[in-house]
Every structure is written in C-alpha cells, then in structure tokens.
Image 1 (spheres, each protein chain N blue to C red):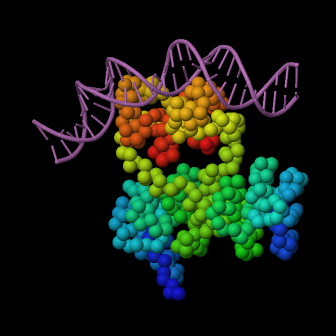
Image 2: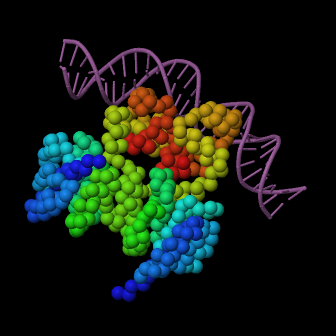
Image 3: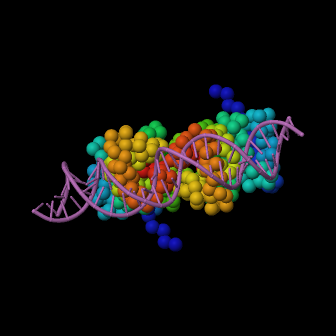
Amino acid sequence: MTQTSIKIVVYEDNPDLRESLSVLLGGSIGFELIGAFVNCEQVAKQIVELKPDVVLMDIDMPVANGLKGLKIIKQLAPQVNVVMFTVFEDNENIFEAICSGAVGYLLKRTPPVKLLEAIQDANNGGAPMTSSIARKVLQMLPTQQKVTENNDYKLTERESEILNLLVKGNSYKMIADKCSISIDTVRSHIKKIYDKLHVHSQTEAVAKAIHERIV
Amino acid sequence: MTQTSIKIVVYEDNPDLRESLSVLLGGSIGFELIGAFVNCEQVAKQIVELKPDVVLMDIDMPVANGLKGLKIIKQLAPQVNVVMFTVFEDNENIFEAICSGAVGYLLKRTPPVKLLEAIQDANNGGAPMTSSIARKVLQMLPTQQKVTENNDYKLTERESEILNLLVKGNSYKMIADKCSISIDTVRSHIKKIYDKLHVHSQTEAVAKAIHERIV
DNA sequence: AGTTTCATCACCCAATCATGTGATATTACC
DNA sequence: GGTAATATCACATGATTGGGTGATGAAACT
C-alpha cells in the first residue's frame, strides 16, 4: 500500500519548543509538519485549509487556548485526531480534553521518540497517553463500588424486572402484559418497590434507579 | 531505597501459557511469581494468604472466570493491582473489567518485554493498556458531542427548568409552587416538552433526560 | 404592521397512578 | 407444623397525569 506522510499541525506558544518540534517532525520520515501556530485564534480557518491528520495542541496559550481550539476543531472536522501536549497533569484539564474529543494526552517531558510514536499511534486509531494519565482516565469511569451499593435496597428479582420496565417508559398496563400478570399485581409490586426505595412516584423511582445504577 | 520484587499471582487456565508466564516471571529480576492458578474458584483465600502486588488475570476460564475473580479481589483487597490478560477486545468485557476496578488491560499477543513493563507500570500506579484499548475506554466517557446533541431538542429555558424539577421527582403541583405559576401552565409546558422529546409520560421523559444528559 | 416564539392561564375528560386493605398459593427455612 | 418471604390477584377511592382546544400579553424578528 502507498505510505504517505502523516500531516501534522502544531499549536504551541513557546517559540523554542515550536522550533524544536519543527526540526523533529521535519527531519523524520513519515511525518510532515504543515503548520505551526502560536495560538488558536485562527484555528477554524487553518484546519479547514490545511486538513491535517493529527494536531498537536498545547493547552496554555495566550488569547485562545488549546481546549477552546480543540472544541472548535471537533465541531468543524471531527475526524482530525487531536493530541494534547501540555505540562498540566490535573484531572480537570484531562477530563475536559478527553470529553471534548482529544484522542491523546501527552506531557511535555515526553522524549522525542515517544512523541513520534504517539503521533503515529493517534493517526492509526490509538489513544496515546502516559499510563499515569490512563489511570486518571479510568478513575473517571463509573466504578463497581457504586454498583455494589445499590442492591442494598434488596429488591426481589421480580421487583427489579418491573423497575426496569418502568425505567424504559412502560405503563402499568404494558408491564402487566409483558410479565403476563394482572395489573393489580403490577400495582402491588410497585408499591413494594416504592417502599424499598423510599419514593412515592414513578418519576422519583426512575430517577433513583438510573442515578444509583440499580438498573 | 530498598528494591523488593513485585509479587505476582497469575490466573490462567491454559497450562502452556501458564508455564510460559512462570518461566518469564521466574527468570526476570524484580519479579516474583508467588502463585499460578487455573481459575478463580479459590481466589478469596489465595489473595488473602499470598498478598500479591499485582494479579495477572485471564478472563475466559472454566468454573470461575476472571471478571468474577476481579470483583472478589476488589472487595477483599482493593489495593491489589489487577491487570486483565485476555484475547477479548470487545467493549463489553473491557467496560466491565474497568468498572470493576482493573487497572490494566492487555491482550495475550503482548510481547514478553512489554508484559514485564506493564506489570511494573501497574505496580507503580500506572494503567497499562494498548492504545487501541485506551481509545475504547475514551469512548466510554461522556463526550462533548453528546453534550451538544441534546440541546437539539431545543427546549426553552423554562421548559428545561421544569424538566429538571420533574427529574428530581416533583409533581405538577410542586413545580407550580416552586415556579410560582399555575398548575395549568406547568401542564402546558410539560405537554410541549413531551412533544419535543417525543415521549408520552413523565417516566419516559425522565429516563430520556437523564440518559441523554439533557439535565 | 404582521408573524413567530414564549410564557402564561383555563376548562374538560378519560386514563393512569398512589395508597390502603385483604386474600391465596408456593416456597423455603426452623 | 409454624413462620416468613414472595408472587399473585381483587376492590375501592381520590389524586395525578396526558391530551385536546383555545386565549392573552410580551418580546423578537421581518
């Protein structure tokens, strides 16, 4: 297959670092730096014109920062793989970057070789990040602990089944049909569910069920 | 500082692979294999007695599989770093493993050197995983796209406010009080909300609101 | 000036829900 | 054999909700 270079655009306000990156990418086979800018002010125009494969994005830049730039890129050209490249290692920045669609998150102390690997990786559908960043990302996911808490309500199997149907928007009558029981029985089960969850309406039960991941 | 070996327990039903891992770990400085088992039947007892630093856990094992074992370990000894080691690359298994507290997720085709690196990594608070796995994990997080999608329903401010109150379990009457409007107005707003969300009951509206993060 | 959107309110009616009270049958456990 | 938990069903009553129709005033836009 024909191997073309990965087209890269860099956003970085530090002139020295920007120069270093230019030299690194310019001198490496398979990589092509097609733009390097001091901030994200013109990001929309630049992305549309240059059509990069991968964007290396600093976060802390004057005037228009990297998170803002990232969001604009993901709106205009969601297929572009944006890798954050920053000194920040706090949950807040990581979380926002990931949620905004960044595929990778590297720290500036990443050695050049690893940086090139990461860019290739991002281009091939991977998600390059240090494993300390990965650990932080994992902690953002819902944990099993929450999942275990909930069955404290000790719903019976039947009750859980009915609560599930309730959450999916079924009326008493629909539940009765689906479970092949009378509507009065459904009523009876739901009364018990309300007791156990300490709620007094479908709405509350559904909200509680979803939030506490009972369903 | 004093450098002690990383104590490792392996769960793997394939005898050949188990033997290979024993040889690899036994012959590597800084690693100490303190147990290797065919399944998770005795996992509770084994973990308590052996007190490993890292557990390498296959998923598909007869009788008691790796996800089950993982959950038991995280309940008994949450400080143990469990790395999944499997051929499965589907979202379902990855998601369940991560949510149950696995810190890493490796595929069986991982080369031995990388495997040792990953174990060290897990032991040092990292989260070793291939970058294709990482990409899948990222997709499990709430994305900015979803956050933007939802206002596609174009609820007015008032409607959003009322939907929020609904989700919190308020009845029409309570909403009327809190918003200082008549109950008929609440009704009217809710009718419009149902139209926009394409639902026909509180329950459905609440479920949709929560799932699509409108609230 | 005309149109659209929004928030407000009113009335009606049928469907659905919440709650109480009580009964029966099955299963499991002591 | 007695007890407790579970699932089933029935009846009753009042409150709440869902849908329809329509009206008014304010703001925004054309």
